Image 1 (cartoon, rainbow, N blue to C red):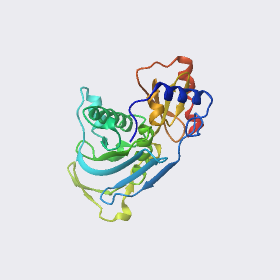
Image 2: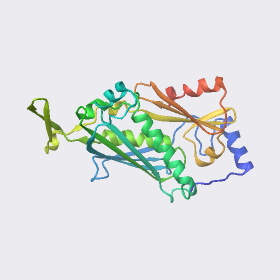
Image 3: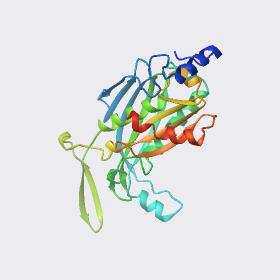
Amino acid sequence: MAPVLISALEADYILKGIDDNLRADGRGRLDYREVILETGLITQAHGSARCRLGEGTDVLVGVKVDIGTVDIDGTEEEVATVKAKRGRVVCNVECSPIASQQFAGRGADDINNELTQMMSRVLNGPQGGLNLEKLCIIPGKACWIVYIDALVLDYAGNIVDTMFMTTRAALFNTQVPKAIIHDLGDGEVEFDLSEDVEEWERIEGWEHVPISVTLNKIGSRHIVDATPLEELTTEAKLHVMVNRNGKICGIQKSGSGSIEHSLLSEMVQVHIFVI
């Protein structure tokens, strides 16, 4: 189980190792642990994936698609009009209490909500990659809703990066039934779903879904793929969302520490070297 406290001696050891570009497990500052990725593990889901980072953090993601009504809520007519022609993504992230002590008790809800909101904000945002308009079946009436459920089975640091890698792989593995539209005349339409799995399709835009590169500021340096002990010495984190073309799709800071402007610019560019 991951530690929740760190001694001053341990913190000093980690800090000196990072200064020397030699971390406790032998990695350099910008080295990731081995990534083991599997897809198609949940037969009841439309898509699924599991990602293990080294011998530690383990995340399982299942994707289900279902038909629902389009979201036409909006304070402005233009917003409502755009939403009426789109499907949507509904996310849920849960960290198993047996993965770490920090996922037990009241604090677990805060962590789960924070991770859920982060994933939902990215995937439903303008840079989320998925073509949400292609998920619309009948404008103003019916659409596909993509339900993404992520479960953190084990924790050894760097949840966010692992979560986004797993989600992207699960979306790649997802097959959506083909909707067949019937024009009944007088502006009335209805649809059926093809039962032929050969006609099922991947969600358009899955390949453009960004992954996360999390930079941990420790002292005057920054590292990627932090272990639990390294995270306990982290002053601030910078989550950089990057798509397959290396384009930055979003940035989010967490942690109470500050990041100097000169270091911030350097951290943002790290994704060029690690993806």
